[in-house]
Length: 323
Image 1 (tube, rainbow, N blue to C red):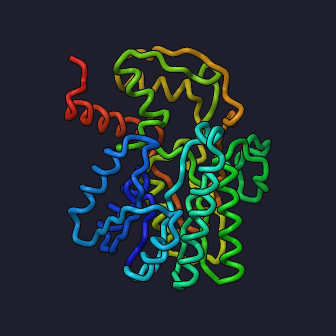
Image 2: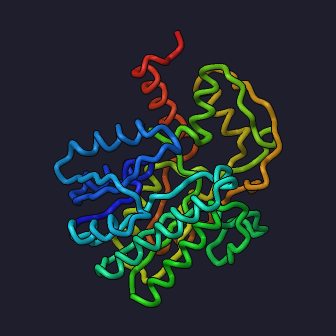
């Protein structure tokens, strides 16, 4: 079976592609290698995956309808894991047009092509950010999620609705997965885990929102990948499903764990939480457990220990580990 993974050279996409290859699937990955963070990281992921005979890397943009249509025609794609996006809540505040073009129009291109080529399942990555500053805790899928705080979650919520349209009109099985704060080895360098790890190692000052009194529901990459694969394997009509652990911790506690792992103290400066960021993310994963058999098994303390070991070796291999 051929599975298309958009954003296949990125953090979640490369881990997902490897897991699919390991179980015997054929994977076609699409990525435009943009410079939101260092493209060399994504190219290294692609080079590693390309050593597998069942992996094909296509460099292209989901905004290009011809490129998207050709993928389905040329590779007989049957299932889609749509992970490609312009990421980053705060970055989207200044670039709403770009985020809309990529996250909504690009998603529509893929949904349309998948429907016309009779794909069996379309798994669409969304985000816990769509809930905004909801008063309903934990976050549950029946929340209308109609008050996003920035262009990133607004564009992702709009793409969710477009997925329902394609299901309603064309019968395309669309499963929307709302990811919660995914982290792990080889993660994105712009995200908090790696910013903290770099800063605690180098001694540089790092701004911390509200003195660390914000809460996030961290989900280890392996748990996330297992959830995505379960969704790829199970046509559900149209479904919106939270994919997270359901155990938020404060940023202060998150920092404490990294300080303990590193044996160093982080140099912090408290700054106000931006209006684009909610004070908490908190997953109700009941639906994921019932519909996908999702059972996250990696605690944040274990996940950070694994991530720190990878980070330490990565810095040693790159010659940037301090003496």
